[in-house]
Amino acid sequence: MTTVAEDSELAGLRDALGLLKDREQVAQRLLESSAKHSFDPDKELDWDAPVEDGKWFWPPELVSLYDTPMWRRMSEEQRHDLARHEAASLASLGIWFEIILMQLLVRHIYDKSVTSAHVRYALTEIADECRHSMMFARMIEKGGAPTYPVTRLNHNLARVLKTVSTTPGSFACTLLGEEILDWMQRLTFPDERVQTIVRGVTRIHVVEEARHVRYAREELRRQMVTAPRWERELTRVSSGEAARVFSIAFVNPQVYTNVGLNRREAVAQVKASGHRREVMQSGAKRLTDFLDDIGVLRGPGRRLWKSSGLLA
Ligand SMILES: [Fe+2]
Ligand SMILES: [Fe+2]
Image (cartoon, helix red, strand yellow):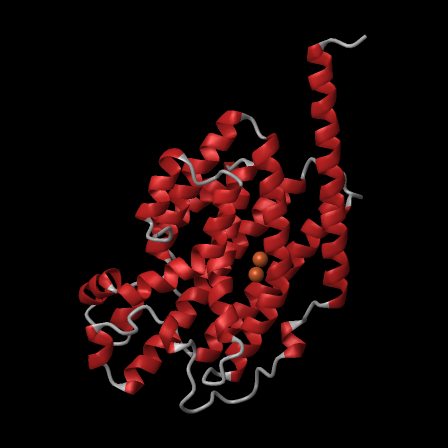
């Protein structure tokens, strides 16, 4: 005869085994998809083709100042210039995120079975991110705009996060970095007004990133079930704080100075822009719906998400 305590312990074990089996199945499918659809950007894209006259480096509607009074006063050339600098700024942000993610993934698998599909997929994803970061760097160089590092403070905050963060928080931050940029890239690669090289870069990224999003989502969903209560609470607050920092750091304000605009006024107009708010909230919607569903958007964390402007 088993006691009630033993019963619930057995049920817990069964659940945990079910989750682990599910984890292997997800990873197996992602590995199969990676084998079929992975790209070498160095070979896949024509890096020697000249920059095309009159084409955008980023769709104008996704440029931060779009549809503001300042935008309406800018010449077409200056708008193109700003789009080129914002593309470089977002690519710089992307590289920063990917470098953080690579370290988080390495730490995530450190104690796990090296022959599991889950670990093999994590290694595949690290290899993807390696190629992406090199690809983004090449794209920045091609556009002729500088790289745009995040502020010293954010750079160092992330140094702490990537070194100590426990896993559910790591995966929530991963999704934050991946999903909003991914939403923008899905609008960019089919856009014929955009430079061919940028369309190629965003197409490769969207295809490979879809698997990363799946991997992080499934892992976060499992961890929000299995992690101890304090860790779930911490994830709610840390992801809200990450959303707040992310929304501020999203476009480096130096881009405005570099295209000859008043930085302070530009930042104020972006902040007041209804169009921009809608873009950022639409970009975050898939993510915030998911996080809400698995219980991340509760309590004080939810208020931080709202203050980030990413949650309506
Ligand atoms: Fe990536
Ligand atoms: Fe990724």
